[in-house]
Length: 339
Image (tube, rainbow, N blue to C red; front, side):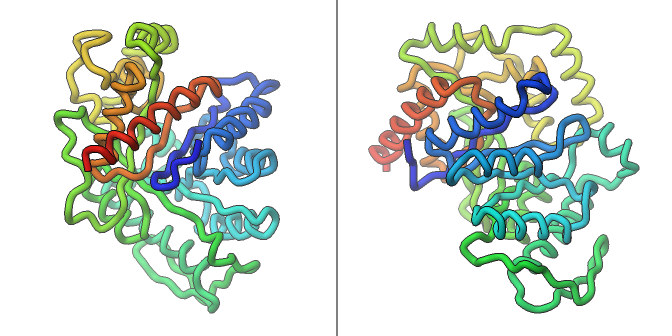
C-alpha cells in the first residue's frame, strides 16, 4: 500500500531478541513484509550488543527489490571515509539507494566502554563534522579537504563515485536544540517522538529541515481488540520497569527524558497514546493504540502538523502492517478533509 506523499520506515529485528539460527530468516521476512506494505525503507539499529548493521543491510538489499535500509551510523565505530565507502559500494554492487541514521549518542555504558566521554552537545558537533565529510566525499568529484574540531582530511577522494540519484537520505534525532541544529547543518530529516494529540505543536514554522516522528501502531476494528493485542504483546513487567528506571538515570538522551518525564497513564483505554512499552523497557517509542478510525485520526493530525516521515517499531507480522496500512489510509483522508 503506497503512500507517495509521506515516507514510512519499518524497523528490522534486533539480534538480541532472536535466536541466531532464526535471525537471518527473520530479517528477510520483516524486510519483505515492509517492502510489500510500501515502506520507503527499514531502520537497522546499531549498538555494542547487536550484530553489525551493514551486514544486516546487505541481507535486506539482497532479498528485496527496492526497500532502502536506514543504517544507524555511530561515529565512534568507524571513520567517515569508511561509511562513504560502504554507501558507494552498495550503490556500485546493487544500484540501491540507502539511508543513514546518524547517531550522536547511544547507551551510556556502550560509550564509556569505548572511552567516549564527549558531552551531549559536543557529540552533535562531532556528528555534524562527520556527516559533512561523508556528504562531500559522495557529492564532490574532486579531492576533499576538511578541518574541524574532531576530524581532518586532506585530498581525500571516493572511488567508486556515487550516482546522484542514489545519494543517501539522512536522518538524525531532533529532540534537542543541538539535534535540530545538526539536522539543518547536514541536510537531514530530524526525527523525534510525537507528543500527545492535545500537546503536539507540530513542526515549527521556522524549521530549516523536514521533521518526522518515531512511533508504534496497534490498531484493530474495535478498541477492545486493539488493547487486547497491545497488552498481550507488551505486558506489565516489574523487572523491565526497574531496568528502565536505572537506564534513565544514566541517560542524557533528550528523547528518553521527554518520555520518562510524562506521568503514567491511567490505564488501558484512557488514551490511544500509550507509553506502557517504553516504561516497561520493551521499546523506545510511544505507541498509538485503538480502532483504525481513532488511530488514523491521530496519525492524520500528525500529518497535518507537518510530519511527513514516520519510523515504525519492529513489525511482529505482515498482518500488523496491513492494519497499519488501514490507519495511514484513514490518516491521509483525515488530513485532506481538514486541510
